[in-house]
Image (tube, rainbow, N blue to C red):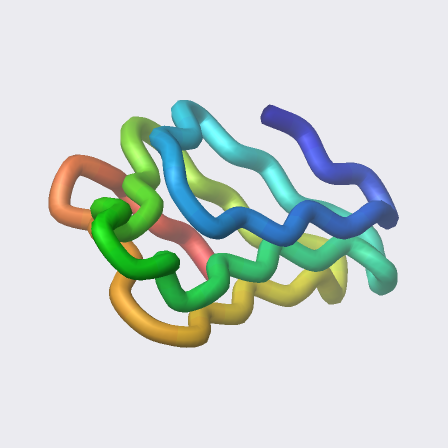
Length: 68
């Protein structure tokens, strides 16, 4: 997944090899809804060039290499 000066709001699911870049780039992981597992990040996650990575609750990064 590539977010280039855009925004992604995520409530559940698995995201693999995420790149977020640009001053307006935002990856926002929301609090999971009832009976749903938290979102999971896997592989390389790179946040660069002024982008933002925001979490509002649990997010599983145990299988991710996160670079901010």
